[in-house]
Image (tube, rainbow, N blue to C red):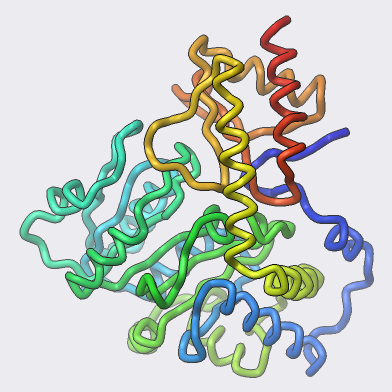
Length: 355
């Protein structure tokens, strides 16, 4: 039996997998518009948005959602703070560099917890218009304090941009309560769909800002997407079948309710972490997302265990690159998982380590 314990794509649910064999329908009609409008409304409900907020639906990866947000929401007259604590946070830095958006990185060294003092020290005497953060730096597992970041942005009248691709539906997050202006999501994480769709929810004031910026792009132009979404369409061909599966999935999630969804993922995460010590394994002391656990291997054999899990048991976890490759791998708790799945994986790890 093969099983994904990865942070995307995740182990999908049977009712969504069954939809994958259906014929892709024609989409430039009211029937498909109704699918898109319903799915968008349900996703916005799960995120804590209200009727004044808008959703952009992109047939693209999460990184395209990040780049589109930088290009559509900011320009050379802005000055941004960017939380740079790992590969995904650094991607925002790279995008700002590429598109010549003035910015200052707030570097978070591996193993350290992001604090407001770090932000204040990096910001210095500068005046900033926005803050960009990958709220769950999935490369390290750190989950940044969204309440602290939200309060900082409100206090300093800054636009708050949150990439919650790997945190949404796993950790507490509310678009309106946290004062988020742009929320970036993607299909292949806790939404438990295939890769291919990304979403950017925009606040009313961010929509106004977007309307005043000439993005210089066609495919990812938010103004065009927002105009088309008024009638439930996208400017260009969307991932049609994936959109239909998205509608089914968010309707199921809304029936469950956001509080229970997050609580269920948290239960699985805490159960997994509580059992690591018995195997002589550890996890970092900094704040972690419920989405996944970085498993630390004191003997430096993480890559050996990763390979054995994949080859001998059919269990795939997220390996780490570079210097961290031998020290840790990451185990996801999102998707079609239960506490029983924790035991399957932990038993396999124990057998491998006892060889």
